[in-house]
Length: 453
Image (cartoon, rainbow, N blue to C red; front, side):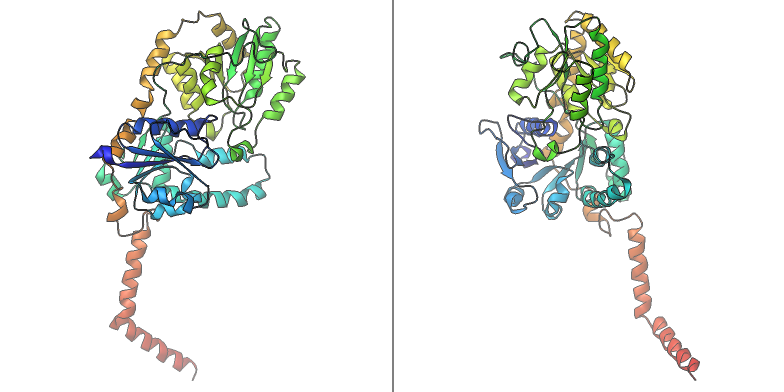
């Protein structure tokens, strides 16, 4: 029965009390799938896993295959981030059904995070990075991603790696059985306050202040300086606003070492006279306290630059703003700003538009708190984890191998012309082994002798 299928989620990010977007995604997907299958969530060593969760848990060490091999051998279906194929290439040789989660556009993020380096130095690492990522295109039976934009990206990547071929197309001309959308979702219900985490706790932020939340990290592709400058514009006429950055130190040490805007953002806030007055920085909020932060905030920001990462991103923190009913000011260009527009959840502004952000903040703070309640509830209904995870649920109930993994005469992931090359090599080998080629070799030897006389 489908409910007896064993599903192993391999999270590449920390899971536990302190989680970022990827860890939260795998926690909730495991929670939802546990209603349909026997689920284990494996997370990197150092994760704080709770035995009361409705699924089994395990830890592993990145790059140490024996630490995860037993879990892989004991499962039917592996759900893995695309990065897993380069620190565990052995996954490609396992007998499991493999679901590759491509919601995190790794190459786009890597290019954005390394853009400060000199090109020759960057090129060497890029070549290695591209080579290591190659495995993600070869070994998947089913690929999931967070938006239709990402799906188009993945279809292009898979076509370039030979996965869009007669076998996969014949199996399903829509290719939904190869690549489908499993967006970032929302927990059931709405958040509940349990205690004060920001107001009257952070020095300088009181009950009557208006809290503007920047929910995620300050990565190179994001634009926190525009947020700070917009608050400076408003500070001239209302000093009750408080912009908070509560997540400047990522709980995953590997991710925490990435380039970011932390230093520049603090310097800008200090230059404008707003540090610890109108702009505040924290390290990271425990996951259990995150609902309290959301409910203590009055509106939220999601600002970024015009980059490839923007085109492909699906910003998990924006989904949490929606969960809490927080009006949103978002830069246009990514899939989550389209959600803000589609459901009328706030204002969408242009890239680096300080005045536009300031105006949007002022307008949204003037609205009654219940002004957009109906729109937020509609969005919550459409974005529930149980709803967005349905393609993954369907696969795990009735898993299958990708149509091209067993039927094609050449290796999956080889260039599209590989089959023709294999046939040509076979034909040449036949000639080499035949009478015609033996005769030609004799003639060649005779001509060679004649030329030396």
